[in-house]
Image (cartoon, rainbow, N blue to C red):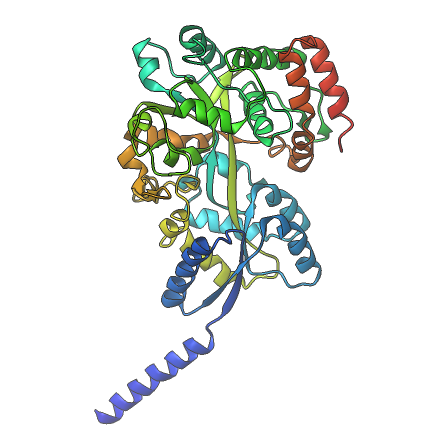
Length: 447
């Protein structure tokens, strides 16, 4: 018996030593390099090591340097095992071989492809595979005064038509502006808002071959709608600052903004307090607010949502097994830690599990948001509003993603040509047909 006990102990010791001997170390590049966010990612790495024995080195990389660093590392055969990357790199890196699209697709299917928001999956499609694993994202939103809409029996602003009808009823400057449109042509905010408005009507300047002339009739619908927004706005060059200030002061019925406004609306950030009343910590404005993420134009009844999605990818130089396990861990046991870095801007693109389909959305709503004070979104906004915040990921889209032309579309957006011509139209300096002709002429020169 003693001999058997010693033998068992020896075997256990040997197995333990073998396990430690086979423990691996992988490298993880992340663009979430703020100290508090790095700490959260280190917590995930530590928990993964405790569970598996494998170490993860969390390596911060500045987002603006990610492309050049990854290209250089790929050429040297020295890529990290896992990269946290932005949408713009997913398809080009899959095509170049930097990402192991087959392994990433396996991870998505192992986790359950149906548990992910369809839009986030669709934007990562490459040769029939999901080329990277969707992690988190956010959608641009129409923020609106639900109390005023209810008072006047107005439909939610989820279409060009409904927005225009609401403006007719609510626009009463200077006490209340029906909308605050972005009109400052050299500000990226206007570029982002306009892309959303064009997408809503199904208008895009690219196809799979590159530049695609804008459809005249559909584009004129976009221009006329945006002029309606601008005419209901204050005069001057407007961008995110004025739209937030006017809405917070109770003088705007609708604005377009990112979800990073949600904690400010609730009086949780001293640097940007709501001024609708005398209490900068009041949740009154948040309680009167609702959101729309997907809205439609007359030529695109299904509508669209403008979204920014982030992904995790196993690379061509990875320790595939450990890298895959780490991503699965980050998207399951460690998922709330992943999202808690900034819940107001990190919507759960994985909604739940097969057993609990809404598990991660429900848990995300309980994560605290805010800067100077903290509160879960579920404590500040009605449950139906919280649900709407994440549903934009169902129809998430961006110019050029489906066509494999995101890089070209981004150059077009960043050129601010669209901003300039739209501003000329809403200022009455150019007709609709001439505006479309000018847009097509100038966009066709971008490559």
